[in-house]
Amino acid sequence: MLDYLVRFAQTHESFRLPELQALASLHHVRLQIIHYSEYFPFAVVRLPDGGSIANVASRAILVQSVYELWGEGRDYESLHASVKSIAVKEIPKYRYTSFKFTFDSFQGSKTSATQCQLIESFSWLDFRGVISMKAAEQSFVIFEEYPSLDNPADTTHKARKFGEIPTKLYLGRLVGLGSRDLINKYSLKKRSYLSTTSMDAEMSLVMANMIHARPGSLIFDPFVGTGSLTISCAHFGAAVFGSDIDPRALRGKNGLGLKSNFQQYETSDQDLGSFTSDLVNTPLRGWSGPSATGNSTHCCEWLDGIVCDPPYGVREGLKTLGHRNDPDRKIHYSADGQALHLHSDYIAPKKPYSFVTILNDLLSFAAAVLVPDGRLSFWMPTADDVEETLPIPTHGKLELIAVCVQPFGKWSRRLITYRKRHSESCPSSPQVSGTYEAMDDTKAVDAEGLESLTATMPAGTQADDLNPFRKRYFEGFRPRTTKQPDKPELSSNS
Image (cartoon, rainbow, N blue to C red):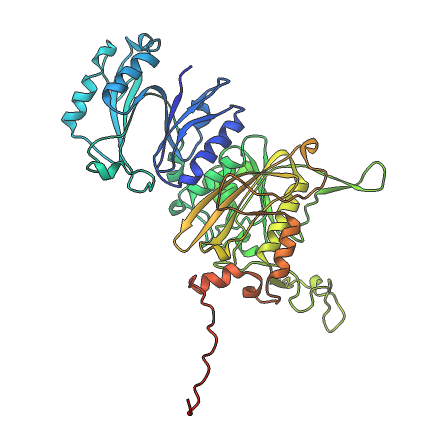
């Protein structure tokens, strides 16, 4: 059985492998990573139990193409020897098909004349079919990997001229393509209705893959806004719906709104609608009522996926329904004694909301309503300085699958993805602590830890009091300096 070479796009490096692994899980294919580095766009993978790598990669956004790996080496001599050893049984299958050879060099290049000479060196393959550069039945690619200046562990470029001699070579036969064309189709530049918080198409589509959006699945976005995430999920066949605390985002303006976006992409049939609500006071129920014994409630698991981009308090304020100065009072009355919420022009009051608290609420909600193996994926901001890094929350019913980082200069945002555990695999305590070992620079904290973290935050009702990241963002992430003690005054007699 041959290994496969995955040719990634050299972008969003920390997202590439998790997306591919999520799609392998979706297709029930066991994927073994033989070789991979974020500094290069190539990965060698193996399917020990069989399956189609082309099907796995066909909807991947960060994969350009996948190849049957015919050989690899450090130089062309070892590459030829590898092909003769690995692909000896494959060569006769394609002897009489039309074919073409092309080059793919990363961090280096060769002249056209040199490329032709190297391609001719494979004439011993004895392909007798027609050479067709436009409509070939089989496409073979010679890959060259040159030293990366971005890789601090790679010192080979110091000993040789950069871009002159490749350090790794591959020969592959094309077996499938990714879906990077969808980025252009769903580009925000072509979107009829959007806002400042609309998620870009590439990341929206990656998130849809991370939560296994597919025909027959039901996906919910509790911060739906203009629907960027649900639109991407609908593309892959999922039934979607959402909620938002701001009704203006759902209604739209000038005849354009959330529904018009689904109409634009002809996915209205997958849109189940949206409603005005926050996560704390959602009308959705994760509990179906008393159990058979009548002593307790039992969980109503009905969502296949939850995907969202919670507001960080930067472009949009992080708020929940309620009164800032009277949080315990549920109903407010006008001077004539009528409940205010019964007035036709009533606008529900809102108060600032802690991002730490919303993480706890989000995980608790997901743990209650997700079906076993259902997925939760959301964005979480963090300042790059260690002091402001917010721990990643954990929950006993949710398995942490992946943490992907998208840097933005002085701050970053992390895409956190969880999988709902089966009841028999859950720990006896519904909430446990733990550390995600896949990333050395990542901390994890359980719900109890989040409450402790909240307790250490400054008390108050203002947005800056409740959201330290927001405060640091508008401070420009300036380094914090400790106040030096006052110097003692010198007496005139000294």
